Image 1 (cartoon, rainbow, N blue to C red):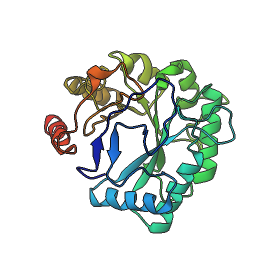
Image 2: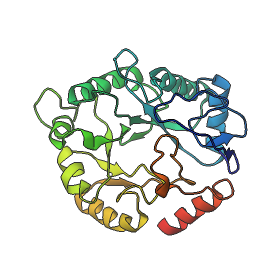
Image 3: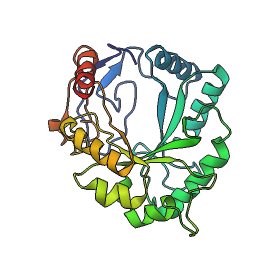
Length: 270
């Protein structure tokens, strides 16, 4: 979305409640175009055009697992499997230059067996698509809350081995980015798990060690030494009060639609 695309609204939220547009939205920012459904074909095409206009080349799509698996849904009980399929189809049909990376979400019961099954499913369904972002021929996977699985479980998937869950060197292989949250996650999580790199997810510098810009030079030095890819996350403001009402210390304003906050991040990291 462009600068000025949202204005902020205030509503009393109850933890665990379901959000019901148009009066109650998941976000504290209200779209100038009004509430919309992410399954709307024309809306998806408009977003793709806006991304291209603003130089956004990659869409990282939230995915909560295949629709047939019990528990594969987000906190609003929405499964994103069909949404992902629709976005990829629209990119293919319109010829949009935007490419898709997968954001693997921590659905209930996620384990190494399910992750292997997920990768097999996504490989079979989408590996022939030109809409996917590929690095050295491999699709890109961001793994949110990757620390919730032990590094040893990830290693059975991501470190080349002869076991039944190994994906390295197979059609299921990809470029996998784990979440760096705490100070020692590099040595204790990213490295032993076999991730190709890491990202920080949060766009507020008060959420975690990994999200603080002052820590990024050290994290980048570590990444270079270990031959890992570092993907820092930035954004035009941050407000997750509707899903984490206790997290007010992490809020960052958008300024005039986000342009000031965005430029401030860019200046500090270039």
